[in-house]
Length: 241
Image (cartoon, rainbow, N blue to C red; front, side):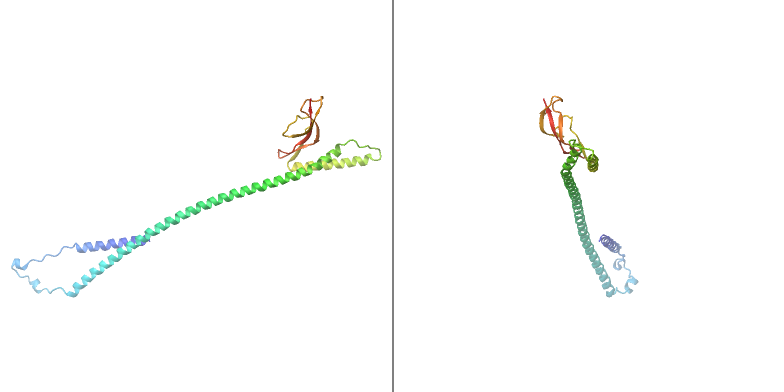
């Protein structure tokens, strides 16, 4: 449309210039025979201009005028179409920017939702893993108690079997602890430590003059950390004065 509009403008300007040059030619001055008193033989012998030629010139001027009017009309129409095209282009560009902004917001929301979902899944997995580990810790507690129990009576006939049995339990406990450590779980003992409510859970308090007050003197089971966080507090007995 812009190219057609420029071509129409050029054509209109060229026709206007040609008409201006034609209309601006000076008319040839012919001496008046009555004023000079001399008869011009050329004028008396020159035949009058043919009517057909005059009609043709008039027709040509009318055709030029019609062509000029048509070109002006076409130029105006092209100008309107060009303005409409610019308006439509601006509207499309605005819509494009709006859709681009919506797409950007959608991507941000999608990424945020994806991250939130991943965090929720990770939290759920971590919670279930901790729940599972806590459920099997009592098994390890009982195995450790069995190893540390010294009330068994041994004689020469049962000592080898009992020793082999205890060695087997010790191997199971070692394997248990190694597996828990791979999962980020580590145990700690509270015996002889000062009572810490963040790490210990007191089941009772006893008077014990052999140690300072608020010292752990007995431990029912060990405490455990998972990735540096408390998984299970140590169950203890605390001395008082």
